[in-house]
Amino acid sequence: MSRRSSNKKSVNLKVQNSSTKVLFLEKQFLKEEQNELEVISISLPRKNSTFVKSKKGLIYELIQFNEKHRSYFIDKTVCSNGKIYMTSQIDPLFIFIQYVEANCKTKAQPLTQIMTGPAELFIEALKSSQMKMIADQKGPDDLKAFIYNEDKTLKWLKLKFNNVKKSLKDLKIVSSGASSMNFVKSSLQEDNDDEDAIEETAFGIISEYISLDLIEKLDQHYGISKKSKDPITQKRKSEVKNDENEQKKIKLEDQENSLFSPKKVEKLETKATSKTKALEKAAKGSKSINSFFTKK
Amino acid sequence: MFEARLISSGILKKVLDAIKDLLNEATFDCSDSGIQLQAMDNSHVSLVSLNMRSDGFDKYRCDRNLSMGMNLANMAKILKCANNTDTVTIKAQDNADTVTFMFESQNQEKVSDYEMKLMNLDQEHLGIPETDYACIVRMPSHEFARICRDLTQFGESVVITCTKEGVRFSASGDSGSANIKLAQTSSVDKEEEAVSIEMQEPVTLTFACQYLNSFTKATPLSPQVSLSMSADVPLVVEYQIPDLGHIRYYLAPKIEEDEN
Image (cartoon, rainbow over all chains, first blue to last red):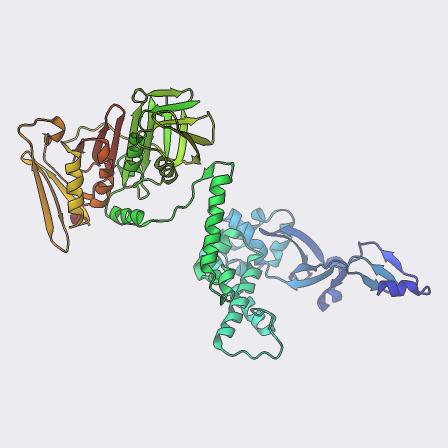
């Protein structure tokens, strides 16, 4: 496209510097005066994010979509920065959760003390009732002091997970894999596959905002990603039985490691032979020798 | 530099056979005084303690204390390559990550070297308190091996009862029960063939058969075995390795079923 347009001499294109940005905004932002939008950058446990706070106190996440080699024509200029920015409303609790988790585990603290730096601006956007979804309030109401409640948090996250799942389902944008447009699903199994893919995506979206620790607990509590943990099992099994070959290959690699690696060999998990199994079985009912002898 | 030479590799083979059933890998701690090994089995029910004194070796040199973690299966593979009459020399540099086993045939015509990689094992050493045992039974090692083997057929656990009359081993299971009683021998021609009991007070303890069976793999090392027992402490099964040291097995007693 650009080559063709440059051939036409009548069109005089200017290349704008990359500070020009293309931003998709919700209508209501345009109604408000621009200077009342606040843009705040915050690092979440697993990513850095930018948020936009509207006058009404709604919080939006600024999502960036970046593709290489994309530019815009803006009137007679070229904007070489082809990134697309979009705003997407977000529950402010997702921002609060990391602060509360980090500071209020053992003692109740007022929000003004835990939300420091740029995060301070979010406090007014949050209602106390929302905060109670992840924490217990202590002390007088106006103090806004909270103590972290893990059970509540996990319940709340599960709720969010279900909401995301429902939205994904309604939008029909996730499927277990590519399929032809006129492909007719034949069995329930296929539906289940889709369901798994949706759950996986929803879990992925939620886990972008929370700490690894919480992700694991959420997973343990509700077993959400149990199917998605091992992507290999989701793949269709090869019809040719090549298990034996694979095992042989693995064995060879092991041997190579143990024979040729110049470093000291780390303790390897040894396969349980029938002898060791018998010993393990025999050990049942005996006390541990550790209980008699103390460590030096 | 570490170097230890034994005139006959057979003894080292026997030592390895005595521990490799219980342990997959172990750290050999080499110091001026000799080679020590202490390790628990995987289930942490028994403990093996091996001591080979430096003066038991034909030649022994240890400039710096050295801990060599070895995979015992790999070590066994190497020792299989030696004839029993071969002289064996274990060699390692300070801070080395390999150990070398050198076998020399009696007429010096064949010399073979085997190098094995060492392992990083973080094994904790346990302090074993000095204990005055209520009963110490000494008996021929092959007799003990035979008893353990026979009783294994009847039950998973052996009850050892030691009184002043003698020592009784019993096992019972679905198929029936077995009782073996040994009395002290009154007159002996050879000391190692005697059954002797030193007893302060009678003791009854229950142990896992399978473990006792594994201990008896040390039988070729010594004609005599001693069992030391006290109530509620681990049994000690000790084999003296003539002119070299000893190997001791500690086995935690079974928890009495009444307590459950």
